[in-house]
Length: 480
Image (cartoon, rainbow, N blue to C red; front, top):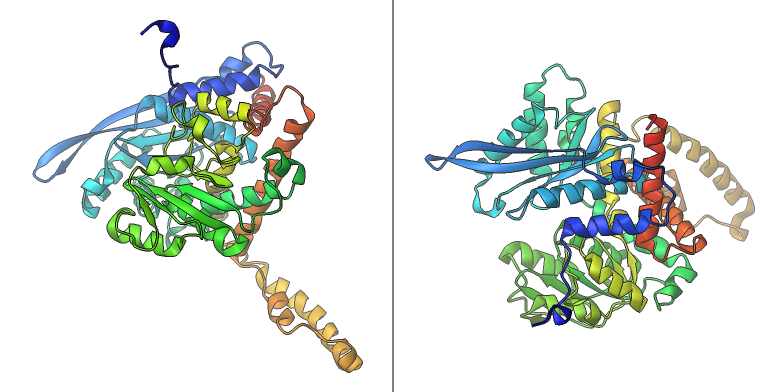
């Protein structure tokens, strides 16, 4: 085969992030040298540690990368997966820098990973491994409330974060802010209401904000609102499940396809997300689920006709090999890097609108920020003002009821008005309110650049431009 007829080379995840960064800075006017300072990863720590398991010492390899310290602490999840490597962790750390800047969370970017398949270990073994990994990171200040704050990612969750927080507290017995060393903890162990659902909820809020702008909806070739829209979700894990659940139950969308590692389910009338999720939890996949059509080659369902495609699992699932066959006019990246740089170019040339990962899945880091603030303030959100808010509302209700008695049948309160109006906001409502506001504000910053700068052709480039400009201003304020 001649060089000219060879298939184009697919960029790696790391190369995709760098390519997208370069496309953005090419339309910006950064001072000499600052572009490189923002692009490069500051440091990556690789640790290899042993844990005695099953009668022998097993050695594990872990990573913690710090991309940018323009703000501290740095923030980013820890994932458990066999494919974890230095390039992936550094690319994810870079995305965290831009993501935090875009949603105005006051963090630099970081990321961590452990080369492990968590399904191969019992719970007590995972605890030993996690605690030892946490020990190795914490003793180098790569876990610290004021320097480096991890969170859950693929393969980890509340349980692992609770172990990490406890391990840090054991090592720092006089640190009053020890609980703030990690976010994504269980609510009863210093976590915050709404954190588990946060990334999926953020995807929902991102789509709601997109559909508030008819000009943007028209750019994708769609019309109207979310109600009735056909959605295919790739990956019904924590993010995909919550996004699908909320979009169906609260916005009237239809989930017409669900893709998992062992195949896919399709039903044009709409899948029962809760039932499918229960089946996956029980059986480890979608195979055997009776109330839908099973597709053996699950990845092919990415190419099904739908209105919205939500890749919510791994990097690079939409690539040079399948990009030309993607039919969805709107893609929202719930996962990190699901569209490669090459595929991104093909889809943009075709007019597909992509809501980029650094914005779409920022719900997790946004609510993590709220949890970190809660841990530092040592008080639950809503505790001080909720009853005072209810008391003020009671004054209004009392006056309305007086008018109701005076006017008789001519005017009356709605049956459930009093109950709804009197109830003060609890922590979950405040978290959702803060997340909704964050997603709206960030989208508006992106679309302003998208629509008002001719050289910015799409939302991804707009997101990078907004984020990089904010990081640049932070570095310039430090004297760089």
